[in-house]
Image 1 (cartoon, rainbow, N blue to C red):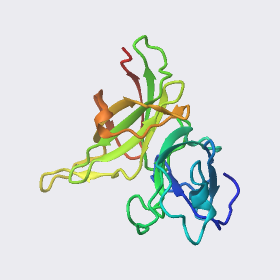
Image 2 (cartoon, rainbow, N blue to C red):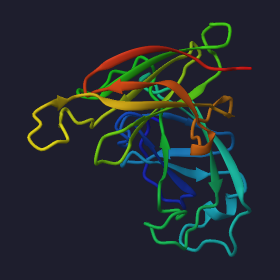
Image 3 (cartoon, rainbow, N blue to C red):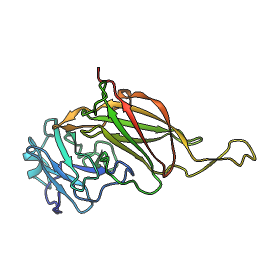
Image 4 (cartoon, one colour):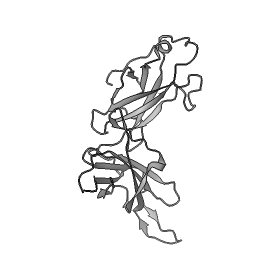
Length: 248
């Protein structure tokens, strides 16, 4: 959405889109669409739903909402990044959001819903990110057209596991960009002067379901299956692997 508008009607929900590499809110304009839904991008970069099917009475009264909430509904939206850094995707939004909860509470209408945007294989990494590029093929060694979500889990001693996510395109190409990887770490023994710059990383995969005709890649953890082998990643290092995904 390229037009910024001030809102003088009741908001139904707000969406905050996050960059697939840094997890920071996106500031550039995106095209967000849904049948029967009006979406407005505000000055803070949030995408606010101001109209939706079944919410006509709710949005028409700003100061005093109507008695009772609208019936629950799941709204399907699609989002496209005109810059090409992120792949198009779909997602579902459960409505209504709760207007009685404080802004910091989960499910509050005042709490934005975070949606991760997955990087295009052509996206440029920020300096220092670990870069893993994958070419996915099916059982016949042909480029995998079906969208797949990849999760990269990086083990860093004495720190929480670092995760990066990627989504394959129609050619089976995918990139995972993981920032904030330590540049060096010292040996574990006292007086050990060895410097280790690489860290073990495990790959997992899951087929992405479709929402609104586009991949909807927000997968729960139990959906993922491990992929061999273990990779060695590092800050600023780019690796490329060809991976076979079982399709039968």
